[in-house]
Image (cartoon, rainbow, N blue to C red):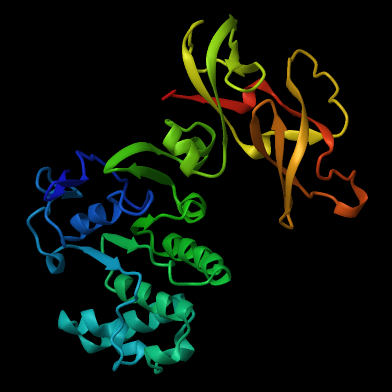
Length: 357
């Protein structure tokens, strides 16, 4: 599909195929086109080109109320003068469903979201997390074929977002409906999704499962947008079997797994995640059958973050970000502090090549 607004192409020739019952996320920065894509699926925008099919039926020209597709918005959109029970029952009453069936469906979904005790309250009497659960319940009560969620947790604080992520995953498992989730938060997408489409400037940069996107990014944009990473730019100066040597700019030569089968003379960017890099006061022992990358370095910055400490290590002209998890009681471990001379090291398999620009 393609959608333009004047000279701006918000969605540029995007094709997606989503499995029934899948939890699918559209992930990207603000303005990348993910919400426009969601609005086209919901019927709120019409594509300039391309068609939308739902279980084989062309729904491109159908208005939102004639699609078995419901949307949950960031601002909840609950009716303030209606009770929670009536908010959830609204679409069922509009469809002139029998009263007994309405009562059965509303009571069942209130129980599922654990809000039975709040049925006769009004929206202004609920917390943000409770309102979000009610908005989701209202969208699910008549069992649509697809539920679209447009940054539904963005207005919640961190602890509540983390709690709601678990609840969303549980609700999805219970109802078995296809969920399409729009977010700019990589943590939300990674923890919830079966698959993720990473969107950049209206294009799908990569469509894969969370682990594949994180460990094997298809582009420099994906590597930098999903989590933290370090980039080492350079030229291939030697190839030995499955491995190569990269002569870097402003950094010593690096040995890396040559997953792209590049030849001597080609340029490459190597992505190495901070948690793949070890930092120790003493040089590491050689690994049997492996030539690990070891670089004498200096500690420049330290940020303690509870479950791990983040270090910025200087070697050559580059500052490299590394993470040290606190799997044991921190005060019993060797202390690394500012300006210490240390060894930074990682296995050649722990870097991943992306295109050089």
